[in-house]
Amino acid sequence: MSAKLTRRSFHVATASMAGLTALQASRALGANERIRVGFIGVGNRGMQVLDGFLRHSDCQPVVVCDIFTPHLEKAKERLEGKVDAERDFRKVLDRTDLDAVVVATPDHWHAIQTIAACNAGKDVYVEKPLSVTVVEGRKMVEAVRRNKRIAQVGTHRRSSATYIKLAGEIADGRIGKVTVSRAYRLSNMFPSGIGRAPAADPPPDLDWDMWLGPRPSRPYQANIAPYKFRWWDLYSSQMANWGVHYLDAIRWLTGELAPASVCAMGGRFAVDDDRTVPDTLEAVFQFASGRLAVFGQYEANGNPVLIQGELELRGTDATAYVGDRGYEFIPERGGQFADRKPRSQPFKFEQIEKHDDVTAAHARNFLDCVKSRNLPHADIEIGHRSTTMSLLANISLALGIRLEWDAKAERITNNEQANSLLHYEYRAPWKLE
Image (tube, helix red, strand yellow):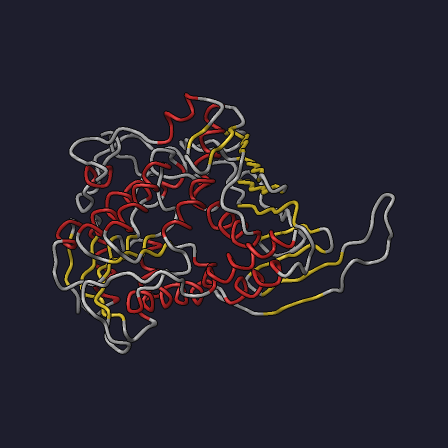
């Protein structure tokens, strides 16, 4: 157990510091020099991330890019018209006056755009989930390393002061051995959810074919783009959209690399809409070290599951509840055949952090690492491992089986059909390079 804690302490230290590996910059940046940034995808989350970057005086927005004209116009207005605007991300990457890009496009675009950005010599801040397939994620890691780029994944809790402090507490054994961790996405979308919509002509200010990108050609539907793609499994999933945040935090706080097995169950049980992802899902991940992680996506009811906060870690000495107002340790007592006295002291830490503050902190860490060339809090490998957990849950759900996972080989060992779902064939002319 002491050796385990030593490894966990090292993991926490490297996650909460800037990292240990120095990478080569395309141009030397002074500590006070402005970093020239292009923003690819400036819709809902893209604008939130843009605002996070604008909190820092050393960020110089140069260009914004989106295939939906209203998004472009809103971003230009936010920047008082002092930036260029493009509809094709390739024109952004061809520029020689950029140090970095932010990729906040729909999930099925992340891999192509991130790899192309690295090949073009740009550092990348890419929103979560990192990818829509496990193979994409690994190719993204390889592109970052090959091109000696800095890449931060948008799992912004990695830059939260609350979570950084909590990581140290858990590693120090404050709540004992954690055997179960739980988190949930709760939203009662009954009865109509994202609704039903007929095939239609796309809006004239949306490049629908470009939006589809590597995915198959299909008619436009108003409940797919520009935002509701989260409920369509070809483009995203709520398991990845929400699950990756909490699964990443669980991996970090417990010092885990990857699960040994995954089992997910669920379906479209109550909500009557066009979605292709469940309205009710529960995924259980088992780690070889002896613990479970549970993520539930409940979109047919919304009452709280946890007694407080957004994440629960159940330890042998205390249970931790963490949220945006801090965290609390509730002491455990001995149960059957054990001493009933409390096994720890109550503890409460209050650190009110707003969502946009943590996003700004994550942007700050990325900008710092662009200058220092140190690994960021949510380095590409970290983001890949956490995203993989969600993607494996989706495969388990699709096939109705428990998956056994070899994290080193990144292969499923008990079902060859499942391995065929680790990637898909892109629509021409798009390639994973």
